[in-house]
Amino acid sequence: MNKALPIPILIFILGLLLMGCSKKSTEIDWVYPDGNHKALIMSYDDGLDDDIVLAQLFDRYGIIGTFHLNSGLLDTRAIWYQGKPNEFVGTYLSKDTLVHVFKNHEIAVHGTYHKALVGLSDEEILEEINVDIENLSILSDRKISSMAYAFGSTNDHVAEVIGTTPLTNARTVKPSYNFELPKDYYLWNPTCHDSEALDYQEAYISLDSPSLSLFYVWGHSWELRDTLRNQNILKFCKEIGDRDDIWYIGAGDFADYHASLKVLEIGPQQIVNPEGNGIVYYREKGQLKSLNPGQRLIY
Ligand SMILES: [Zn+2]
Image 1 (tube, rainbow, N blue to C red):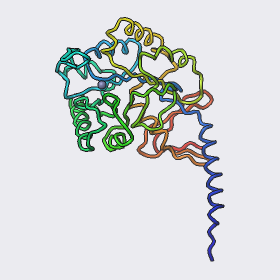
Image 2 (image 1 turned 45 degrees about the horizontal axis):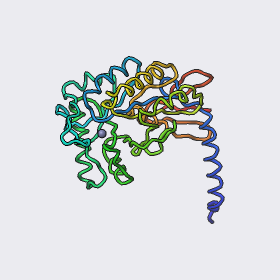
Image 3 (image 1 turned 30 degrees about the vertical axis):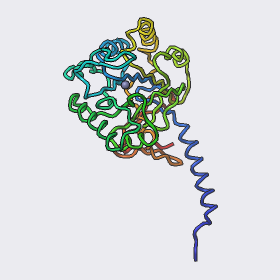
Image 4 (image 1 turned 30 degrees about the horizontal axis):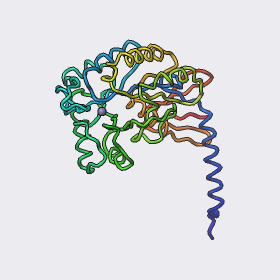
């Protein structure tokens, strides 16, 4: 005799269970590791030596930057074509200073030679990115997790290819103009370019939401040679830095933490943090608590 429940009833029961789970899980007050609901990522491209001053500015205000470098161009002069042929733009950082300059910041990929990835074969994309990961890992003796698409050049297929590399995230240049966490970490749209950051600063500082949020700003340190732009970034860092309610973090660590939250096993009465996962944090009656890998939270 077949004792199995008819499929529509099974689907109904499963639906109820899932509804129950999502309702329960939203009752947990998940927070970032420092106990906050807000986070800031500052993401900068190209690795010119203007990064040195910007990294120092971030240091002054407790901000962590993610700096995307083209390892094949380090130690060379930046000669770009911006209307005039052979225009000298500046100097790329030198290899032996990276660890010192980015002591408190994340070192990340921008492609070995700053190639636009759309239009390249999969092999060429992987060569451009994997060599950069390898070079930067060796130069910094760190795990390299993040990238930014050179020229913002990407699409669904390119993102899929990047997803096969050891990287956990890749940033576009398409502004989201919101403070939401990304849905696709390989097409991670920042909130805005730094030239617009002041327009969103007050909204983020005054945001008081129980949900996790993120203000993600991107730019180029060499653009900050402009006097007004420089004044604006100083103002921005001074206002948004050193706050108790914002988690200042690199893109790689942020992506890792969110990934840990996403793999929690949420049941009707308990949440299990699987073995091998990262530590996750929540607040209970205002108190910051953690759930270690292998631990369960009964509720
Ligand atoms: Zn670039």
